[in-house]
Length: 510
Image 1 (cartoon, rainbow, N blue to C red):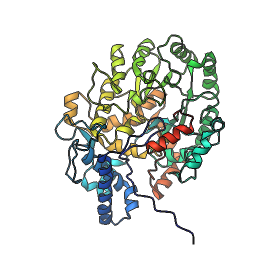
Image 2 (cartoon, rainbow, N blue to C red):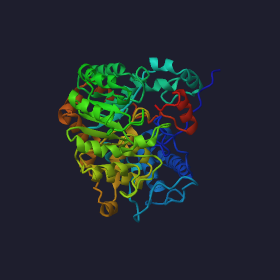
Image 3 (tube, one colour):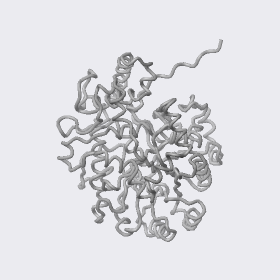
Image 4 (cartoon, rainbow, N blue to C red):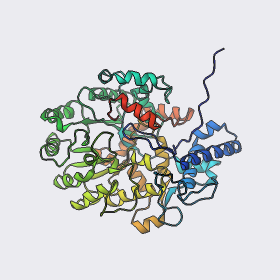
């Protein structure tokens, strides 16, 4: 008799201990993380019976998302009913792992606008967690699992053989990141309207997704979406590798219609304000006529000098080139820095970006944009820290210049990030004390997509009208109606998985 596959454990749709995008080491689960998971499962047991649902179906429904956010408020935040039977105000900070939720203001500084009723009332939960925004994700990724890059690293074969069944259902995890899964996770499993397929740091011929392959994905999406243009491309440039890289920018712009340039200053160790490398690159971007530069800043890559991941060069070049838009990927965020109020005297993390702008006279809503990929994902379970990150960026970079990105599909579908952001709130106390704006529906709509649309020259209304009629949208509506989001997690979920992943890349991040 054939043995049935063991039943997978029920997990929260909003991970209490985020995994990795392949660039940073996942943090070790703390006592607080374990407490959150235990509380989530207890509430799922209780509430699923009350609404007459299977436990797994409940966890994957809007009820499960509301339950997860409710748990985050009560376990990681400072307010709410004590449903957990454990401390919520810092008592779970493990040795060597600082408590991440601050607590500067009495009560909850920031958190999610959910309450206990949403775990049993679908209408109330849907009002908070569902929406019809124009969502433009400016940072997404996938790979070509059969590309030539795999032949350049023999460790991949050993790595793939050692992996268990992948979260996406494929026998090998690398297959989770192909074109098919990308389209499914971005446009069927989530509410994303338009996306930018970005690039990863890799030498020529070694990229997990060469620009020609990215263009093939673009063609597939265009066919499925009846030319409503739901996908844009980044062109990777490695200015430190010689003039040939700059010469190739003209072809990328003319033949492949890239919408912006992606650069990794930590890859090769250079700065945007370097007169020998960075400045010639910016000048060439201006000459070519694609004047959007997306630079990885913060989120220091394993094995690279983190000084080159610092955004302290952004203000310099933004002031020197006011006609060029500089999009700061990850907003300078560093996972090992606990974000608090802006501190210009000792800037770390996001504060380094703000400090660079201020030192060079670049004000809010100018030509510097802050992108949220992985940053929002990482602070989702740290409500006060998330309030500081969003509050600082909206105040100092500008509410018109914070753009939505998720770093998917490294994490699987971005739907968990979308639903959490819809419900997130910054308290009146934080607003008053730090000058942060209220997270109104209007500001959330800007962050979700209107700011990115303006940056990339899209007409949101015209794009929405085209999307409403395209085949991909119809497929997505049918898919979500029948199945709902799966909330599968793709990236490395533990330190062991991360270092196995890194070894498979020959020590390079993903």
